[in-house]
Image (cartoon, rainbow, N blue to C red; front, side):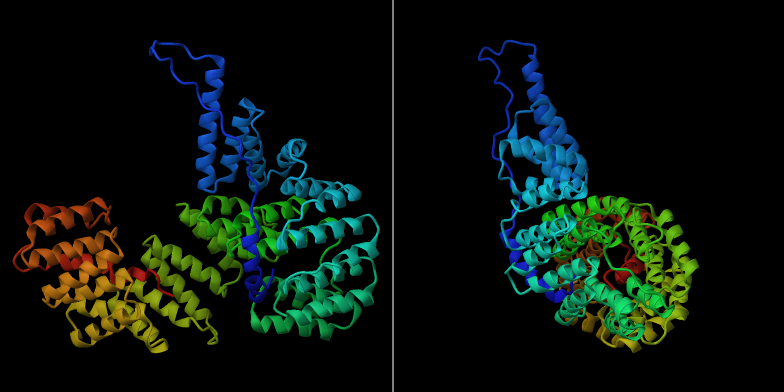
Length: 594
């Protein structure tokens, strides 16, 4: 995994990368006869309709980034129209993205019979050759896959690992050394040549390369690991620890670094990061793939990560990067399948479990998520990341008594060094307020504000709560205005200000402010409900009923629905006390906080 500096440098190169898609038109169903006479479809008609249906389903799945479904539909269409080159190309790319590399290899062979210069197909065949130890063929195929800064680098690294596998260490390292390119190339070149020399037992040369990579970027995780491991065997425990601990200061508590520190302190000589040319090539594919995941290169990243896992199915970092990629494109169910593959023996299993739980919750499997997180916390009661994840799921599922207890565990585990300690008090305050424990909630919200005086979400929640209760009105209004000044485009916070105006009887300003909130969050039922109330108070009764009807249709909380329906039927009473009860949902309910 690369440092942020390296990833930023690579972003420019992404514009030069594109996946090849064939341009052959899809066969269309025949036109109906001019006389419109009823006719039974021919076998050709049925094949065309089947092809078109599968094609459209595949295109939809591709748009939704559901590679598995897209691959299945494209392959189905290809079976009914085997000579369609566009379908062949799309079926190949989708199978590759899905991670079914065996199927992708079969399709790549067919692609190359039609287009010998197809670079992606060449790369896939080359990776297959490397996996099966056909090293000469791997070099030949991979070398025909180059076309730009990123693909040029990956092809060079993979062909070099293939040369190493064939026993030609000198050519493997020389191949890397000859590669010229952007300023982010050298760290890859030194890391991989160092790992090759290390495997070849040329320890002195390996150490020079790895040290050079470390000096280029001491925040690159895999560089740190490789160099520290080499130091543990060839230099001293103290030097290896120094490298690990320097990284730990920059990024505390990384599981792989903590594991390395424990092993070195126990007197172990750590093995090399990779133990075969296949593992080395997987490391290259992972390193570049992970760097592309959030830089606009998701499609290429997906290909590289899947190929890395084809070579090394248990590569925990590649699995985490792939899961993270699926999360970034809003595919939690696909991420779940990936995180479940992380080996139980990996130091990264705990990270995978936390992310797995988050995605299970996003897939409406919150009870499973809660069970997993409770298991993680049972193993380490001070795991703040797991505690926060559990509390957030419980809060999101309105288990307010439970989340109050969970955030309390987090507060008990705080060391005082955490920069975001205020978040635990803020979220516990929300849980306490929502479970009718205002005295405790007020103490926690004040504590959070003391720790982070200008935090807009805390200002908003505490100020709103006071106004809702009719206390500390001047201070509360000032706090909410300070929150709006910081977040003028946050619909929830703007809604709080509008509702505050409403609660103090300033209906004209309430209407003006709530209309602004609706512009920012038009599909929020509570804001629509609030605006309806404000309209009613200024005599705009038709518009009020329209807003209430819209709030009703936006699926408000079940306890709010009867109140909204009653207002649609009867309007508001002269002295409106009931509508304030809907307010406790707003106060932002922790949305966006921390």
